[in-house]
Image (cartoon, rainbow, N blue to C red; front, side, top):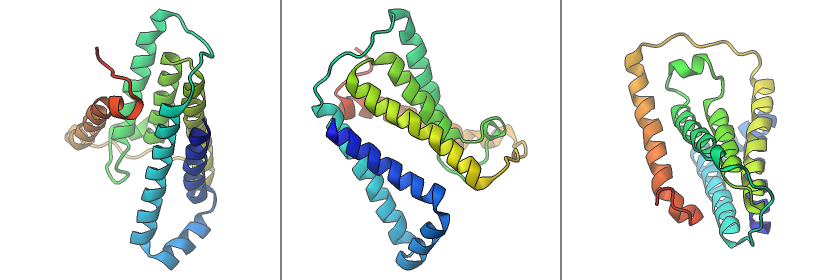
Length: 190
């Protein structure tokens, strides 16, 4: 469980710094150069994910709660919708009509993904990991909204421009299904 805590702490720290200290981030980018900063940030993210996965796989598991069996479909739907929204929001430069209704596609996707996992898994490591990531998504929405100010909805885009974000989103979903057994040790389909 300690590794999950460390992974979450690193994940929070890496994301909170740009959201709460944009001037400090700018100074770092200027001092390091944009490519080195991006590389260091990416390595930090990968490190946090590795810590969380290692912590997940090594934690002694015990039940915190058990939900009724009929909630499984709800959990699966939340995870699927979350992964799709995350994929649609992956490239900030791409415009999609979903951005007219949801300000933060990736953060909303992460929150739904985490909530779905909490519906599906009531063990201690799930509560810590997915509860921690869900809480992070909520806090980040507040911090980013405070930093960026009032939301102005983007203009409507032609449906043809939805194709590339949809392909990216489906790629995320396929990658998630493929990698899930390797990351968590749990296969999605039996």
